[in-house]
Image (cartoon, rainbow, N blue to C red):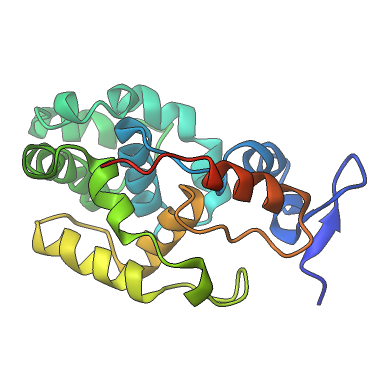
Length: 202
């Protein structure tokens, strides 16, 4: 099966970008571009954990609600959330009202504080797990990798929750550690150029 479809401009894009109206802009402007900003990285890890068992369309449609509910994913503020905040969020119809996942975000914000103290930044830590492109399978044929398994294992050892290998692999695809745009997708070369010019955080 062809892994691309024509976009609104007639140019080929990853097939999944046409599955929902919200996907095209996300595909063209965000997915796969390398990220070094800790807030964005933390946000994505949190949203991927919320997606577990659900569709990305559900999460993307609610992303602005999540940002409002979690103070734009300021991990220092979230780390101070109390049981009252959990109850408040469980009443927020704009997000996914799952106690375990809400509590995981608060826990992970606290673990994030610890990680920043030991590693400097989340970005510097995350990017040490970037796979060698030569070792990657064909685009969009894998749901985990040795690197996502290793990163998941280390995050769990540090006390993070809802960070399984599949969740972490989706995070790595989205944040540009992997260029998983389909061969032939017009965005693949743009992402590769962005990755080539990207200064890996240290």
